[in-house]
Length: 123
Image (tube, rainbow, N blue to C red; front, side, top):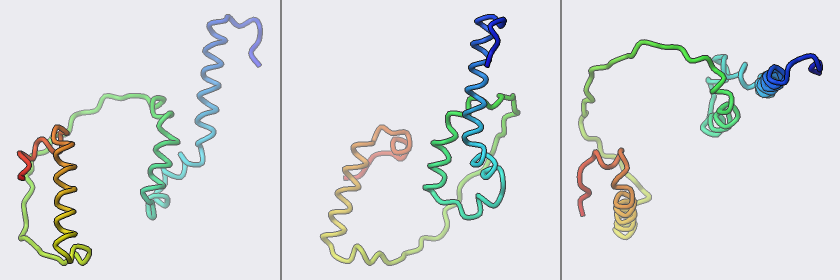
């Protein structure tokens, strides 16, 4: 409990700090787990999503530090084309339906940065 002798502004800071500590304390087990290598050995997408949701409110508490920029200068190299069977697309109807759905998706998202850079969508 905060003493009545503490100024209201300081009392507010103490309450905020106490709240922050409680939020960290609530996630301490998860924080310690993700800090170790064992948790990452068998991590799954649902585990990552759960951790992300639980920890995202705490990220703003991490002290920001200035780091040097890292620049890379490399190019992707395309390897030889490799065909592999897709048994789920055995019939022409399945392939046609898939192609149409893919085109609709690409057209609906053509202004998204990851698609816009790919050039025009063939029809």
